[in-house]
Length: 236
Image: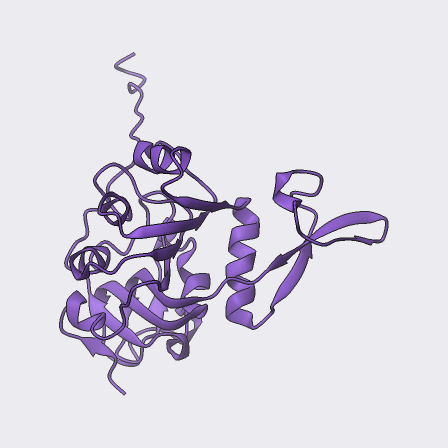
């Protein structure tokens, strides 16, 4: 089955509804599904629960949905320098479930693997463990965490073929591969679509069985969230 769609809007057609949970790949601004997020903004769906490491940056990425009043809850691990995120949470306008970063990744991986719960030592004895079962294994306390799954996962990859096999490039291979496995429907925007068989099976990061729809990216800005530079030695 050819999974390629003609546009980001076509790739999300019939998938969006109020109150849904969406996983969105990326770490900072690396590997953001830049072309799919604006479609969600234009669709106007509301009361969304977004699972993502962070919520974009000023004017970019998931910030667009936050600024448009579409997000009711964030499940993430990093607020960062997103002042809008901070303000909405502090004012009580946005629910936030803050996770240690590794725990967030493992909760998503568990969702994709069909594992409803697991134990981790991370967060034991802190607010992270409040209200959660804690058990002792081999003399050490562990807190029980539950899986994360979503109605829709949107991810950004480098290459795909018509069967949906994905290859991610460098740091864009962050939360994207695990999120691709944990959505009821997964839509991948990619920089390049190659013919079937063109991707060496050993180079596939996400098998096509996890991917329902593929679309060629229309936005590939790849912004740097916070650029820091230093003079070259000869300039110092």
